[in-house]
Amino acid sequence: MESAVLAALASPRRQEILRLIWRDELAAGAIAAAMPDVTFGAVSLQLRTLQNAGLVVCRRDQQNRFYHANREALGPLATSLEHMWTSALWRLKLAAELEASRRGPARRCTPAPGRRARKPRRDKGSANSAAHSHVKRDREH
Image (cartoon, rainbow, N blue to C red; front, side):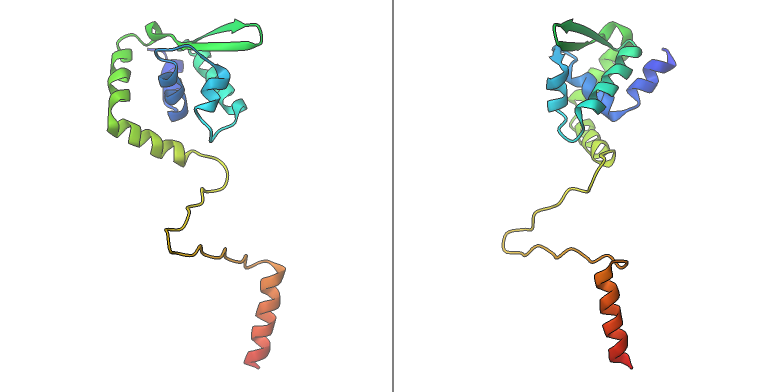
């Protein structure tokens, strides 16, 4: 198997895209909508990588691009991927890897019922904390 194919399969995002289009042809917008934590541009780059590796076939229809998996390019590995995708443990692993590779601020958890949300910590380098440290020093003298 070519190194480009193995490199393309190494990314959890590309694995998820390949899983989405394994049986059905989907528009690029539908693929991006299934992955709300990444931008359309990021999904587009991942699709291009899969296409360059020969794992995805693109069909243009006016303004839209539709993608489907090229199963033949994977040979015997295709069956292994199908078994892996049906495994609950694999889905849990994928969710953890996708969360770890997520860009941007960390997700905020909502407080449990009956509990108050914590106040955000102040930045030690902010002007406000500098003023408080001055007051603290005055009290010590």
